[in-house]
Image 1 (tube, rainbow, N blue to C red):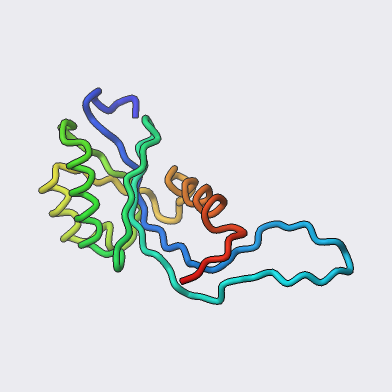
Image 2: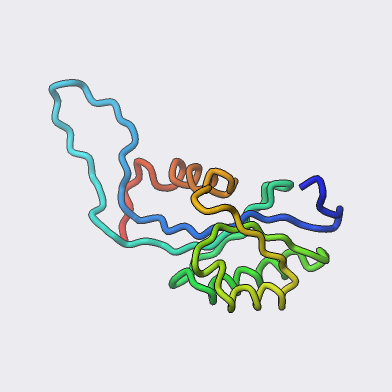
Length: 147
C-alpha cells in the first residue's frame, strides 16, 4: 500500500455465499431444562461479490444470481463509478476460476482495473475475509431467517 501512488486505489475482493440457515453460536440454558431453539432448515443462499478499501474501510458489495465473470464485470463497473477520479484501481483477489478467466481479465483492462492474485490457499492474506466473520456475527448468528 505504501508504494501505491497517492491517487491510486487498492481494494481487496472476494465472493461470499452466506446461507440463510440459523447458526447457533451461543446461548445460556439451565442444565436439565429442555428448550427448543428455532432454526431455519433452508439451503437458500445469497451470492455476493464485494471488495474492501482498507484505507477508508469502505465496502462495495452487491448480490448476484451467481458469482461468475459477468458478476465480476458488474463489480468492476461499480468500482469504476465509485472511484471515477482514480486513475488506477488495484483489485486483489484469490485465484477462483471466475477471478482468473480471460473474460474477467479483459473486462478489468476495459475498466482500468489491475488485478493481483493471492497465492493459492492463503485466504488469511485477504482482509475482506474478516468482514465475512463480522457479517456472520451481526447478521446471521443466532437469527431465525425466513426465506
